[in-house]
Length: 476
Image (tube, rainbow, N blue to C red; front, top):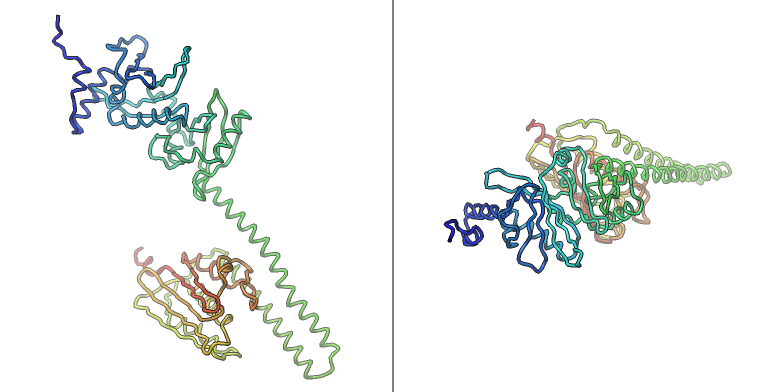
């Protein structure tokens, strides 16, 4: 006797529409065959076209053997994810993969299901793909709202099997498709997994998750072939630690160089004073006095630089003032025409300031004076004209300052270091090695930027960009 009811498998296979509504209906048709909310396990051999369904206790299935494609398509929009997980398993990259999916059921409800996909051998040695399905438990829901990250990983491969929302956010992964997490293959993580496997438990280990950006504090335990870990974002703390380490290195460097640079002029003066006492010739005595004055001036200039660094690092609030660059550049330039040696020196300026500019006047003067001083100090005397050009262009948002010269220039190997404390890039350097360091520190305090290009015996160009605080004040 023939049944009047259509075969659910053949009717489902007949649906070929590409519209989203019809695709959704198709997945619900397949769920009549593979009721995802009632199935606890699906298993099939890699070469087989059919899969076995194991229902939860007390539930009777209409079919216990179904085509594998029916299993995939019953997941609807999540079909591609399951295919990717199975492909990952069969490729041999991992032995287990966990994921969480959301499925629209025929009852119009959305059910969150936890998938665990593994490879297993039966007693005959045959290989099976085993897909375990489970509802999201109260424990896993609590895990999602914990203030720390929770994850589990394969102890042999380091592959992440499960992770809560905190871990996904920490790893910058949009969903629970763990196959896309490249970090789980980095040596640092694999070494950590190996250490946990060998020792059983490892506490409070900081690992770099994203280079120079994100760090996490991990504690983990080995449990039955898995690594179970909690992770907490400590990026801000780690950044502060790195700042302190940098400051500590700079302090050590500072103490060493400062003591040397303070002693050099003092020892020079001690030697000159000894010669002065024994010298009877008035002309020679005057020469010694002039040399002592020169040592005193160098010492004074060095102390002025140290005071400038101290003021810059105090973190005092900026004293905002309207700045007229025509006036400030003129003042800075005129101070260098009182030099004893002005031969072949030519300084030109070009100022364009159609907008009001507001910033910390003292800091802007420090920048202009130090950069001009650098250009004057390292000019070439053998050229017909030693040219220094100062250009300033003010816009609503910022000021662009360009100071260029045709001086000695800087060798390429020195360029990355010229803003370091006490760094001297040429044998002709008579300064403290603090000038450009002070410039960089001051510009950073103003939230600006500085860049440099240079060629030996051709010249150097410094470009400074400073934000216009007048625009910020107007917006407020």
